[in-house]
Image 1 (cartoon, rainbow, N blue to C red):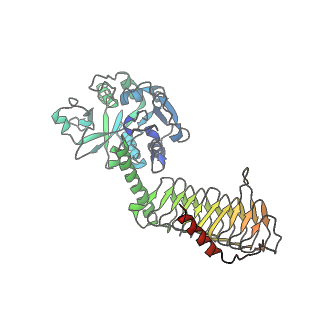
Image 2: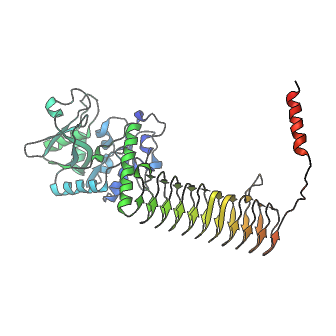
Image 3: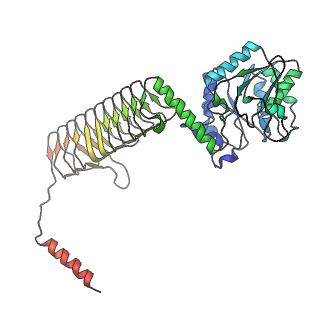
Length: 457
């Protein structure tokens, strides 16, 4: 169910698309259901609400014509229900329900032979959750809503077992029960839990699976809820990585998205954010204060105090501190992009080094080459980007400016301060010399002029 309007989010973005640890909220329960073995998956949406950007591939959408409660939402999917055998109903705004919890619910449902099995949990303070009323034999009799005064009696409000909003149904009995739902309640809505007494009245049994994971009650109605869910999701992600052999120096200051993969024996230092589809290889150290977005690090890579976006760093390479690797940057094995280095859409070959204070854009740097401090590839001519080709074992002198398109041959050198506008042959030294002139007495004349200007009214 993903048809909630989410007005309390105070957002132009549909609630279901708000990210939770790098993944759209609605994608979380869908992923858990699929991991638990679900086949056909449909998202029930509001009219005009396009949440397709957050739906995994292959998910169908069903429009709930009007906002008339959970029962109305499921009834909108009646054609799909009639083609199924078992129907699992999840809430799109309860993202942290796990595949393990869903599997356990489905196992209980299959073993019980019940027409419906609901997920429940016991809370110290049940609040406004619907209370689970059981019969003398322990079966579920019904769920009493507690959203507003008058929905439940004091005795019912004292019940601690609550409805977690997740259900497994036999399809045919569910379809019959949906047809008889009533909206005679304080909210004027059709409640899906009202199908449970209807099933019992039709001679079916209703079972419950008592969960022990409080995440099944962590729904998102506003941004305060969203922050709480993200914090818990982040804690679980970090815990899973640490149990798999990753060292996280300070979990409280580390943010890792759900789609990130980290190999064993990697170390994540404080203040680090790993986002998107980032991959970190074994033995690598990331951080402190580093952000990786959709980037891949090989094994034994070091990246302190740096920012990397959509780039690829080979085994044994080093980045930073204070480096910026932009989309399309590739560092070969053992390569280096050092302090205050920016690399964009360029490949730095194996063992090549850009140690500090350089910009490398739209370039190929061959293996073993070294670019001195202040090297600039001037790649943009005002109309298009041009590439610089630097061969193997080249030595680029400090403050060299390479005006693309230009090529420097293998083993070549450039002198300090050179402006390279033409190709440099293999093994050559390229210099661009300007005669130095010393203007004697300039400082005194400059000071006198400044003094005169200050004294003139």
